[in-house]
Length: 142
Image (cartoon, rainbow, N blue to C red; front, side):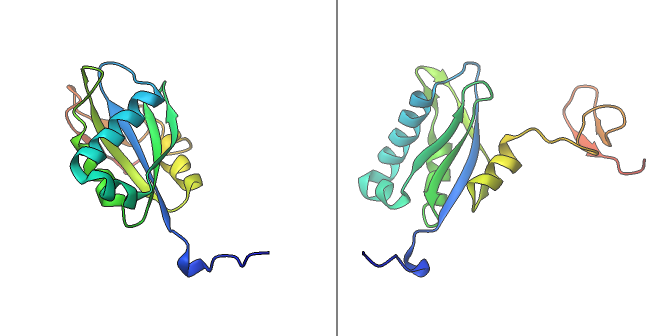
């Protein structure tokens, strides 16, 4: 039986939660191709291989997903997401929602809808917005 890898030698992964902002929806394959093309064009094969990039989740309804990368490749992946201009002729912007060390926390924090007291949108939620929706302030004086 082979020896297990020491914890200090294991690759430390980070999970990058992101969303696509566009007029149209995209499939998982479209997103994978766009992200990989962006990282290959800007950083080359050597830079792409150092990230250990993998698309873990993609929700076509919400247009949100999770990418897995090693801890040294997070900045490279964030840069390549920012460089994606379009998918299938439609303009798109990828917005990074957050980064986590575990996939469970990434899903809880960034992909699920917040619930409970203080998170519901409405008149008594503590969230005030302008009439045109251009700014948002928090009001904790309930």
